[in-house]
Amino acid sequence: MSATLAQQVGEPARVFYAPPARSRSAHVICDDAEAVAVSRKLSEKIAAGAVKRDRERVLPFEELEWLSDAGLLAITVPKEYGGAGVRAGTLAEVIATLASADGSIGQIPQNHFFMLEALRLQGTEEQKRFFYDRILKGDRIGNALSEVGTKTSHDHATRLTRDGEIYRLNGKKYYSTGVLFAHWVAVVANDDDNLSTIAFVPRDTPGVTIVDDWTGFGQRVTGSGSTILDNVEAHPISLISFAALFQRPTSMGPLAQIQHAAIEAGIARGALADTIDYVRTRSRPWKDSGVEHAFEDPYTIAQIGELRIRVSASDALLARAGKFVDAAAADSTIESVAAASIAVAESKAASTEAALFVSNKLIELAGSRATLREFGLDRHWRNARTHSVHDPVRWKYRAIGDYWLNEINPPRHGAI
Image (cartoon, rainbow, N blue to C red; front, side, top):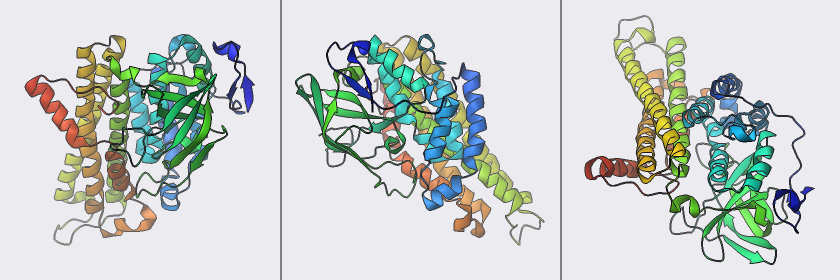
């Protein structure tokens, strides 16, 4: 590990140890248009290995390096710190594009960008200068938020305790998406005052153990296993208040959720593309149809039309939600944040329903041979269903209904 003197980042006495800088250089994306173009080009490369990665559970270490090299993981770094500072809608489109190629890879950066938003909203100037520089060089942040065994997935038994000039982390996290591929582990823990705090710790810090024990039937290569924290040292410069992000209106929740909506939207796109390709090239017509090819079957044609409408509606709501999130980020008020949360909830509900419906219809319309393992077409439904339980869509409908019917704003947290 290389040492970065605390004097450089606002702490006069203590040395802050950072992971070594990446040996590979990272491209710096300049604007929204370039971010989308780069994601589309890279997604073609990612899609080529998606079936094998899912079938054999090949973890995408190389593919995450591609994302870093291409500069896609730094697109939300503000312009004043050298980044592209892309709009929320652009971030969502990038995530959806990656998820259309591979649902797992589309999900892995979600908490990376979530934590960059926390840094933008709550970080000190010294923290921003240090961490933004590392992100622009290609560093990746992994998630150590959720736990098992607590009352809800948003409760934390992990503790952050003061130990002289430093802090100590102790606990166990699960659903640690992206940590296997990360340079930094963003740990959410309760401090001595029982307030939720984010601690950015280098992945190779003594006491950090990452276990690849994720066995979900979908999103198989997100690496969402366990992170064990045994008396792990955390430097004061690495700490950001998580609780403060939701004590006032901020864009934190809507930005987190628009990415989840984008993951489902991308899976829906990928499933539709595979449906069309398979029906055109492999499916056989039903014997009573009287047609030569499956793509001439009028019932199949009609259902493809329905699938296209659902995916288009999902995409339109995603783009619309991005405008609300941008408005909330520019002027965070109770009203603007609530409106953004609801717009994103509408998008998430639509994209989730689209992903599940299209990925299910894929197998029906493609036919019995489409169930063969070699094609891997079932991965779309497994990915959509697994990701969809990250937070329950039924509560989105409740929040949407309460907002429009009863003029009740949704709660402020990272899942709405």
